[in-house]
Amino acid sequence: MAYWLMKSEPDCFSIDDLAARPKKTEGWDGVRNYQVRNMFRDTMKKGDKAFFYHSSCAEPGVVGIMTIASNAYPDPTQFDPASDHYDPKSKPQEPRWLQVDVKFERKLKSPVTLATLRQHEPQLKGLTLLMPGTRLSVTPVRPEHWDYILKLAGD
Image (cartoon, rainbow, N blue to C red; front, side, top):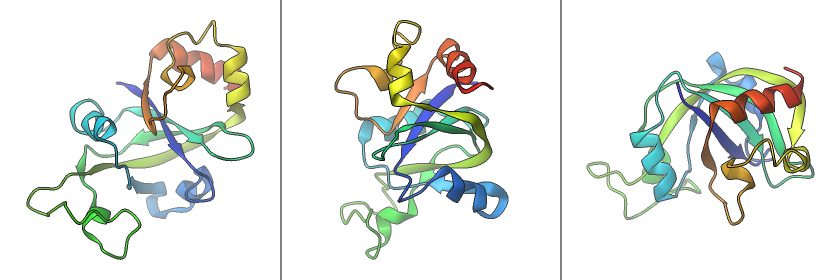
């Protein structure tokens, strides 16, 4: 099993939105970055675990845990002209963009803010989220970082 951190702006899609979905499952759509697409395709697998991270908000941070509920498949929003994520260069026979389904597992007992993560940088050395210039919405998390973040949350 691999571990991930997946960012979403809570005013677009939050941990509570995921928990409210039928079967507590939703497609993680709209990713338009080739590096993340390749991680979806080549590395992320059904059964992996992911932190749900609220980004671009008053207090960004890790707020919950999800399970990757599917392997990668074509993101349907790339073909929908009414979607914000429409890509006119992507064709159904040659899709450019992929998504995975995620399933809500639980909220953390206490969110772990970005400020808290930064305070623990020595213990989280190598966590992609804390590296300068990293802007990816999906990043791998090493098992020792996963465990440490759970301890910070009181889980």
